[in-house]
Image (cartoon, rainbow, N blue to C red; front, side, top):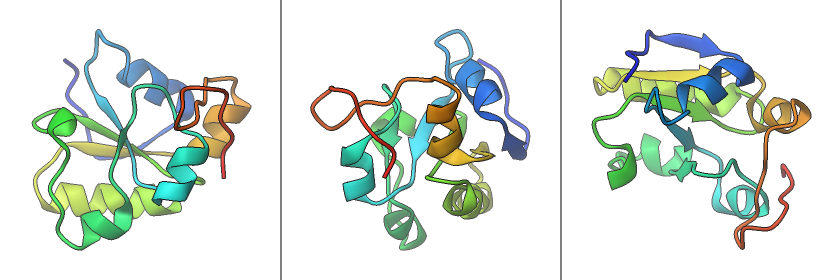
Length: 118
């Protein structure tokens, strides 16, 4: 498992970090309607609003490096700062899910079908 340094990563770097060999978790901090419309397969969901209010990380994201994503990269940057203050290894994705989809990485909806970035 790769150790993450604080900072920002491109969508290509994010995809490598969340590959099984590196073991990081893609943490999507968008709100629930955005998540349902489309997210990266295998991503874990925790809205920034809940994280900022003190919510714990989902079990799937506990004690693992975190690659944080939102729609464009603004909320994920804030979420990575919150996580770092809690001692969690986290980086955020530059360009967010918009760049993820534009780069050709898969996006699925809440039912597993083709999703869109809302």
